[in-house]
Image (cartoon, rainbow, N blue to C red):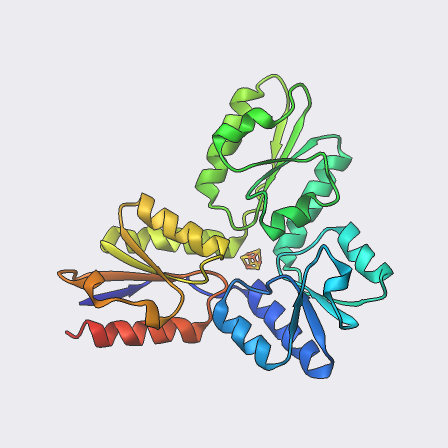
Length: 281
Ligand code: SF4
């Protein structure tokens, strides 16, 4: 039985830095995280042991502490300003690559483009991206392109964790349906997402079964699972080693493993160890 760990997998620098900053703030004073810092239940449990509380980015009354933490997913400038006006101190852990997406969208709007974001309407990152631009169109799939207003030049960016191949499909559809106007696309899919998606292709070439490790509500973990399924693998998403089932591996000689950008190294190691126990040579 061979285990093939993807060349690029697991926690990205953006999540790692956000965790470190939150940890440092939490040992100095009580803090409230506005949302889920990372979509990872293991990390959430660790933060609980530090007494970290959770609040809602959209509701000031949800935070009892003076200091609040904006997550790596970011927030709109208006949300940041409203928390400051309400008297809170902010530890802002927005990932620099999410900030880059905000800047790209702001520049497009300044240059007169109608803003279009390819991503999940309800995802916290997308809500932050469009928070200062209520006129923005949000599309996830080609069939959503009909919602974009006609006759205006379009400035398109993407949620950082969308798979680039799917984003490019949507961009092509936008260009097809809006061929009379200029469509400018700025690629804001983050580098770690691209690396993990590309590395997964190599894993899927060798392995009929792929384990994807990450939180159930982590977008990039779900995107990895969906990509592996599209490439023909039998996919088993797990949050921890305890989720693994022996029957998944009967008659299988090559097992692929990858992990989302909010998955801890120790979780990946625990899954690998458990797999080795389940599938002895
Ligand atoms: Fe930053 Fe990308 Fe990690 Fe999100 S997935 S925190 S954008 S590096």
